[in-house]
Length: 250
Image (cartoon, rainbow, N blue to C red; front, side, top):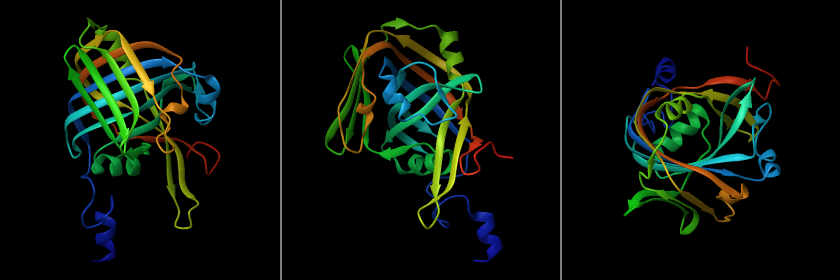
């Protein structure tokens, strides 16, 4: 293979059999259960990187079913998103993500900097209850429940929330183990079609684990529960702060 061929074909690893195809990445019937809860502010201050600012001591714990996504297939994901502010604009900092599919793990980490780790999340309807569970190996680390389609949510408000920016800390090491890329990335969900949105009573329990540290942001009070289904495109990101140059990229 010629040098020019390497340059032309190299967008993911492995070179001759990439873990995922080029984007864009469209999701159909993407289903969310989001439990918003109050947590300890000191715990948030340990994990939210500057220059992001904490808005309130709030966390959104999300379960996401993705039955039909271009390039990434059929999988389930769960994790924590922290409401933050950057240059006066409010959005969400993606703190943790656990999922069960290699392609979106590799693509999410390499392209955007999603903090993805392999685990076993599930989300399903059990009679009158929407149930989410997260196992890391054999160990239960999280359970979430809410009343299934209990009451309609505000469509316009939910749609607006899906249009706010999200933030990621992208880290790629050099061959000597030092960081070669350390950037704050911003991305948006685009071309969103909100099909359903529901609210209702919700509950969330997080359990300690050495490598799946969702319980480090403890649940002090459940504020709300939201269930929605939408089609959307995951927009590619942009670098908004470079930690290795101590400032915004040129």
